[in-house]
Length: 321
Image (cartoon, rainbow, N blue to C red; front, side, top):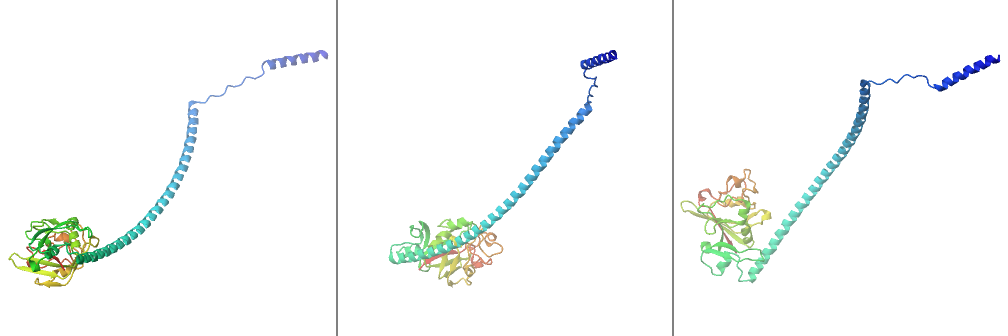
């Protein structure tokens, strides 16, 4: 029995020794992936990355869209605010221009009153041809009026008529030869043009200053046959540039027949580049200044003093009381 037990133990030791010498049973080598499988796996990873990028871009696009919408609303609100502010500024500007015009008119009145006072107290003052006539200048021709710092009048060269209807007339316009075009713009009519010894327009700014004192207007006309006509107005005044050189006339007398300037009374001055009249066909452009100096003031298109007396055109004279 003992022998059998020892024999069994001997075999058991041998088995254990063999097992310890070879602890692992032979294993099958792992299967290697084919190139197709590797490629498929790589594609899956790229797809995952692309899906993640698309998700990020979609989120960013949504944020940008929301920001753009907020910015657009902000821009619209700013534009509306600017429009409202512009309207308020335009309203204030209109009020300021109106107040400035009113104040300027008041200054003109004050200057006129002061000028009348100076005229009464200064026998040496020279304002126009009538002042020269009162100083015994009796020859018609070109004279230079001295500047007047108080009235803001520069030195001015004028043609004085010392013979017609008592003399002392300051010529403000002459159109006889027809060599000078009267189809001019606003600036030229403001400053004057032509030759003082020929056909000319003295200038609205100069006429405005001359007429701030009590003034009469005389218009003389001659046709091709040498027939003469004239028109006189007991009062003549020309507004300033802010009032578009508005024309004001007193009572008419003369032998023209019809008082054509009646239609121009209390009307603004118009030129080809500045339309201030009520004429629907833009008289200043339509008639191209060929109304012999009268087209600046226009109402309802009536621009002729007397058609059969117009070929030589009218000459305007100023005379102060």
